[in-house]
Amino acid sequence: MRKNYTRTTEAARKPSAKDLAKQKRELRAVNVAVGVNFAIFLAKVATWGFTRSGALLAEALHSLADCVNQLLLRAGVNQSRRPATFQHPYGFHREKYIYALMSAVGVFCLGAGASVVHGIQSLLDPPALEHMGYSLAVLGISAFAEMCSLNVALGALRTGAKIEGQSLYKYLMSSNDPTTAAVLAEDAGAVAGLGIAGVASYMTYVTGDPVYDAVGSIAVGCLMGAVAVMLIRNNKKFLIGQAMRPEQHDAIIKHLKSDKMVLAVIDPKSEEIGDGVYRFKAEIQWSGDRVVNKYLGSLGRESLYGQIRNAACTSTGSNSTSPTTGTVDDETLRNAMDLAMMEFGRGVIRTVGEEIDRLECELRELCPGLYYVDLETDKGRTDKISGNLECIINAEEVQRKDVMGVDELDSGESFPGGSGRAAPAAGAA
Image (cartoon, rainbow, N blue to C red; front, side, top):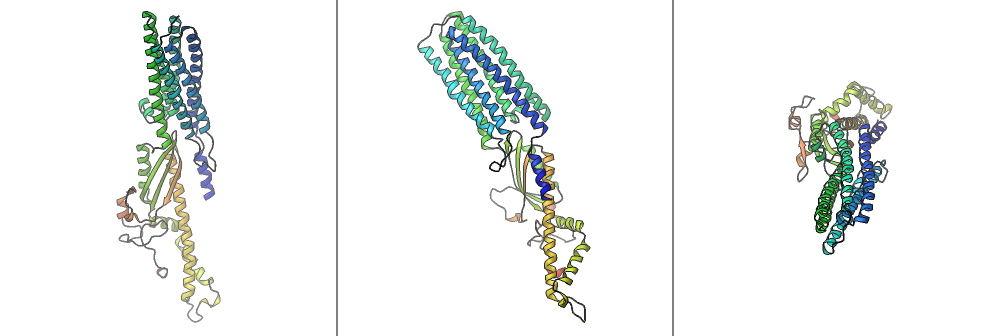
């Protein structure tokens, strides 16, 4: 049984068709953005070579920073798709955020910093600006190309939102697709930066005053810094780790609490370890009576009684019964009960394992992104849980009369995975 579960778990960790389609959309948005930004960078640098426009240079640095950023995003997406290893059992999902964080820091330090510094230098020592008409033409063409790239990123996000049944805004806020969202933010920042640079270049072209161009360079640098800070904060959130969305978490808890085998769900925790990839753990207090009844139902009570009788007849040999009365002596009975109860305990533990496997499979179906589920058996002493440990108890189940006809559950030691009802003494069987 355990081997079958292992295969099921490994299959659950493989990317689904939905995940592969999402990765394809991510890579397409990134690839388009890389191509557009690199072409724009070359055009801006060539035009800056004979216009000496500070705003245009700032925009060239902006395009270069975006290009490097998106190449790092692409590398991160590819690295995060590597399968799990022994040293990294939960995979490499977070690696894309490391690459994205490196990129955002580079944008902040190099792109934003260089643009602001060049703008300040232009204010202090205004350069002679020429051929500003070419600068305006390149900025206009660049704006059109950036809008096309922006439309590709928006299309990828709209497709993802439609698949998830969410609005575009909610999909963006839930960070289901942070790579494409980063491309969207960079493209939107690029369009805004081109607008700023275009206004600055036009004012310089009309008035002949290079101060406008220098101020435009500083403004573009500040915009790049703001986008970089936003990306840093977003990637920091994913690297630290965060819980799954509340509605998903609540649905999992509700499903567990509604299961007839479960009395309580204790200390549930969840974590998003990648784009829409989650890990969930909880301790389960089982209904011992129902677990035992399920095992006895699959085994058959008469079979258990037969095991006890057979053990009594074979445990100590021919001297185990009285020749006059045919009764079994106490030592033989104790040995027989030990053998029977050991088999009974093994059977109950197997049943608990089967229930854990069943619940884990059901939770994966309920939440397709739930790659890793860890359900542990609590010993059933929820009355002693205190402090910060979250305990979710189904009070109606705890108070109900058990299925064996006992008036109420007492507080004795429980069966394995039990309900809190004391196990009967061996002689009571």
